Amino acid sequence: MDYRQLSQEILNRGKEKMEDLEVFIQNDKQIEIRIFKGEVDKYSISESGGLSLRGIANGKMGYSYTEKLDETSIDMLIDEAYENSKYIDSPDKEIIFEGSDKYEEFENSSSNLANTPAEEKIKFLLDLEREALTMDKRVASIQACAYQEFKSERYIMNTKGVDLADNNSGAFAYISVIVKDGEDTKTGMSFRIFKDLKEVDYKEMAKEAVEEGISMLGASPIKSDSYPIIFKNTVFADILAAFGSIFSADQVQKGLSLLKDKIGEKIATDIFTVVEDPFLPNGFYSKAFDDEGHKTIYKKIIDKGELKTYLYNLKTANKDGVESTGNGSRGSYKAPVTIAPTNVYVEKGDKTLEDLISSIDKGVYIISVQGLHSGLNPVSGDYSLSADGYEIENGKIKRPVNQITIAGNFFETLMDIEAIGNDLEFTIPMFGYIGSPSIKVKKLSVSGE
Image (cartoon, rainbow, N blue to C red; front, top):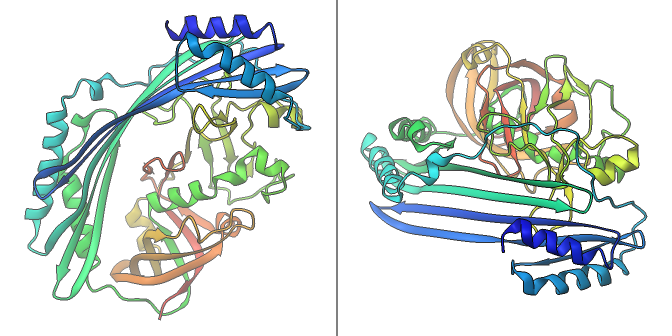
């Protein structure tokens, strides 16, 4: 039985007990390859997925799910969802969506990855590791050299006429090198996100990782003070991702975001714009509809410093009397509907990284931060992160800096942005597919020696 047949059968039978129902099916496939000392250290293919059913009985939503996608699961799914609905006690109105008027049409899945033989992916990693090891005598070893690929399929059908399907795929590769000079040991890293392995130059990646590691040799703390700061593009993207929940309507409604009642107000400097583009070509999270079947929408969350919108799913939109922004999301088929972004990025400016560096007499260029899970508070906006980077003096990189802590408040940082680079890059999708150019901030507290 195919997805469509199975879903239709569940809906038909479920209508005998419940007013409206929705079937959501998700299938994920992941490939992970790791290389160590010229050999394949790990090669794994994992598949997961299943079906969830949501149904409304007596005005209350019940849930059930299964990994078994066949006819024998139908009665169990319906009975469990119906019984579950009796014990749900939520004041929020749950909705089975009737569908959007129109959905964008675009192709997001890449057949290039699926058609690339495993041998080519392994050869790419072997070449990458060998290139990095032979590039400089100070390269002591390779900490990690890996490739990860995913393919995801979704299918949604409900009793209100929604019948949608899509699939998405992508991959990323990364290398982390250990360099040594006497007793001094440092690491350097490089990664690429792509939908076609042919787009990636392993020599470029190896050079990037090795040069970063070597450039950090001899690093030491800087004197504690307030300094102008430049955030590397991927570092600011990671920080923005870590604070992403402040834009969620659910967090706003629960009083867990300081952006409550701030729509239409300035929350950042005039040059700062944050876009969510679910139709971004080659975007990892590009999609025409969200996990509730609502169409996705291109939007500016922040436009020239002004907060324009929160991110809504159907439940939170109904509560605020607005339309969903197409951000209904499920972590998996087992998970309840929450809110998540698609592709989010800071619009790039017109300055090169060199322009930003040359504009600073004495400051710090931050190239990595640690502690994003524990060192920040999305509610207050406060953050304190250990960091590495370079001291800037007279508009030039002077020396590497480590064992420092940067501290500030995210909302204040947004107001203190002085310049934006033109080097937009996206991060490995951990919190979403988030991108940023390099960002120059007026000043930030740095604790060092």
